[in-house]
Every structure is written in structure tokens, then in C-alpha cells.
Length: 139
Image 1 (spheres, helix red, strand yellow):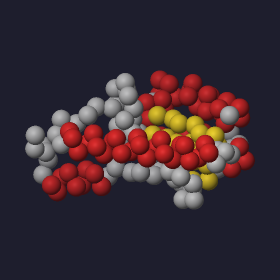
Image 2 (cartoon, rainbow, N blue to C red):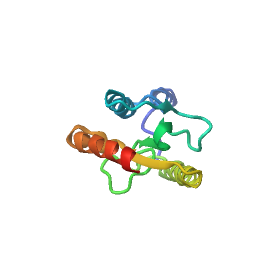
Image 3 (cartoon, rainbow, N blue to C red):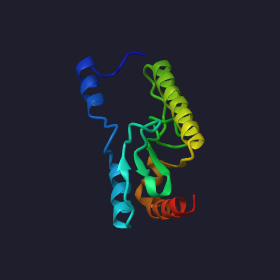
Image 4 (cartoon, rainbow, N blue to C red):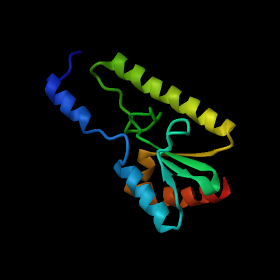
């Protein structure tokens, strides 16, 4: 099936998608800072360039978009009806890269916390953020 948008419209739409400083990421960062945690962002020396790095706790936090990282069983992960094969390949590569990065980090002694975009929606946010603090301190 052909794309429903012109090449220019599709290009503009894709250019507006952020890989850093997303709303869920900013929300988690503000919460951590308010609760006394200090962190580094997108450390290039670490596999997968984790969104948040807490060196004091040797913990990294990945904040994954449900669509881009293929969150199975999530209502926000819907395979597009156009260019389906291309999208499945793209998302499959993302999940493979995620697993490789996680394995490398674990082997280097890092603790990993993965948050999904859907877990930071208003209905689940308080519980997710409370569990995040517990996870950081007790990982």
C-alpha cells in the first residue's frame, strides 16, 4: 500500500519526532532531580547511549517509546498499514539493538531500568515513578 502522505509531508512529520528530550524523558528527569538524584544524559561512551545515567548507583534508565521499540501487547504499538515490512524491519532492528546494549551494560556491571512511554501516562505515572526510585535504590 502506498503512503497516504506526500513525500514532503512525510518528511516534515518524521523531522518532528525527537530522539532526545522527549516529553516522557523530561518528565522523568524533572521527577528524579526534584527527589535529589543527580544524573548524566545520553552518555556516548555507554552502549545504547542511555537516556539517564546515575553513576552513583551504577544504574542506567532507558525511556522507550512504545511504537519505536515494539512494546508487545501495548495499545500504543500498532504496526502501520503502509510500508509494513519496512516498519517491522526498523522496529525489529531497534529491539535487537536494545537487547545488545542491555547485555553489554549488564556485563559491564550496570543495572538497567527500562520505562515504557505507556507507563508514564497520567493513569500509571505515580506508581511508575515511585517504583523507579525503589528500583534505583535497590537494584
